[in-house]
Amino acid sequence: MLPVYFLSIAINVLVGLLFILNREDAKGVLFPALADETVRLGVGILAVITGFLKILSPVAGSIPVVGDLVPALANLAGGLILVFEFYRNRSTIASPAAEQIEKFVDGNRKLTGFICIIAAALHFIFSSILFL
Image 1 (tube, rainbow, N blue to C red):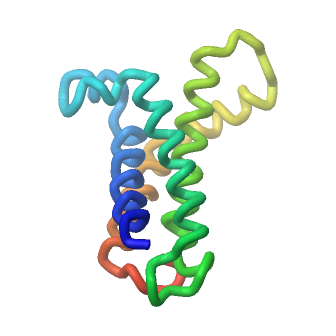
Image 2 (image 1 turned 90 degrees about the horizontal axis):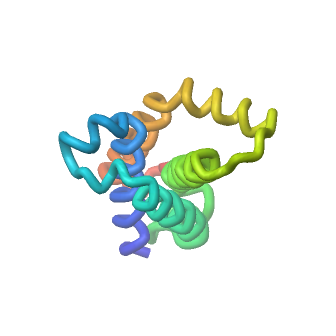
Image 3 (image 1 turned 60 degrees about the vertical axis):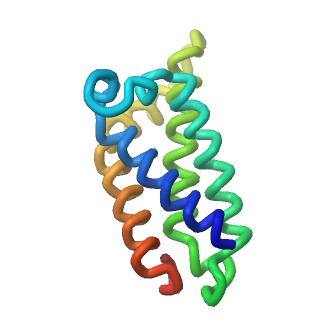
């Protein structure tokens, strides 16, 4: 489905930018709204929904599920990380598992952002290639 294809690319780029830019950079540089945690939660939920839709409806000519696996996984991972960050900022309950996840996410933040942007760019250029 073509609208889901373009939405997947746009959301992957947006999620990648959210991970690469710090909240302080986002406030003054590009869009101040990107630093708001409610906007980030909305982008995360939209990314998760787009990831599931991308798995269910591949671009015409590609193999179902496998054909759009990389951008769908990038959408799902980025969205789940944004939703998890919202949860950690609002939660007062201490959990060792959540602390381990938070440590892993913080250590790989920029790498995840670059992976999302690269997945979006490759999917835009090579829409019918297997695994993209």
